[in-house]
Length: 197
Image (cartoon, rainbow, N blue to C red; front, side):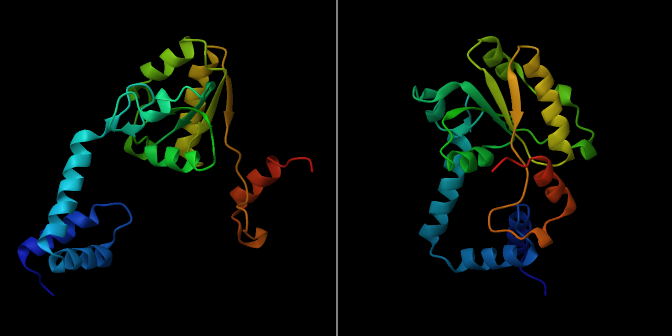
């Protein structure tokens, strides 16, 4: 079925959002068209406001509307532990665990398939923090895929130049998961990372 051009355009734009497929984009577009105009205007204002007022923190890279961000301003956090993550969404997840160290967020997609070069990453703020001597341990909280492994090894090399201990998140079976349904890589990582009981 052919839609009105503005509706087709809206559906196409919504499909560009992560995890939004054609059917979901269509449902969202139709929902927005049925919504009261003031509700749609609030959504548009919220998007524009976030886009114009939120930017990476100059210290850690976490998205914030103040600089430095609230995490970097918190004097109670352990400045000796620096957790490196790929995106702010990773920080949101890590914060839920009660982690009380500092962060460094890369905020740049690194994809080997797109011929990305590691030297394109701006690591100056990362290195400045390592040079300060406050950081004693860098935790690599990177995605457990090929790109994450390569990026992790590269960052470990940078950190080791400053005599900083480098660790990475453990891999393994999720709580509540079943061994029979685990893929072989996850199962192998779980066996390699086993701990004494």
